[in-house]
Image 1 (cartoon, rainbow, N blue to C red):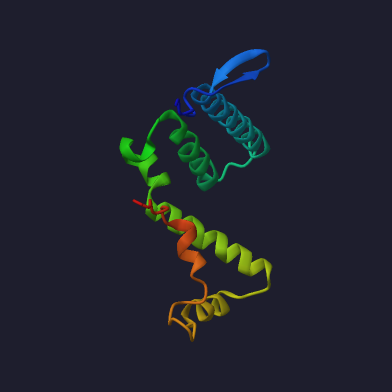
Image 2 (image 1 turned 180 degrees about the vertical axis):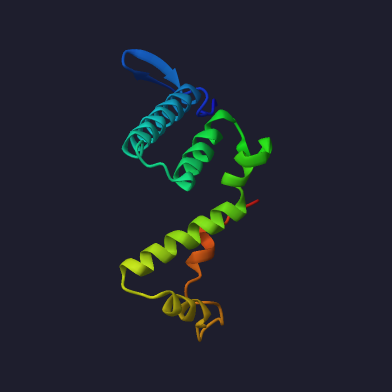
Length: 139
């Protein structure tokens, strides 16, 4: 009995036979191209913005594309993709969402401190989930 694996399964794409690995690479390259195009569009939109923090964000963000593994590369590339940066981004995003929902920062702090009666964990546990790496199950 022969087991079919993703490596042996092929599909026709635009008249060309492609393995699962080739399709994965094609999806990756398409996504990367779309991200670069979007970044170039944003950069064009903010071309006249001379604030140093805006220019710095673009420089750091585009800089990570130069590395296969920016975290391993270290330096400013790792600062952008590291856990601390993800936590800061999650907090900033949460603050923006709450402000759009007419919450003040003091209400946000109060909600974070509020405890769930069932397990004693903060009610807004999802704040931490956004910024942490997914755990890998060893089952």
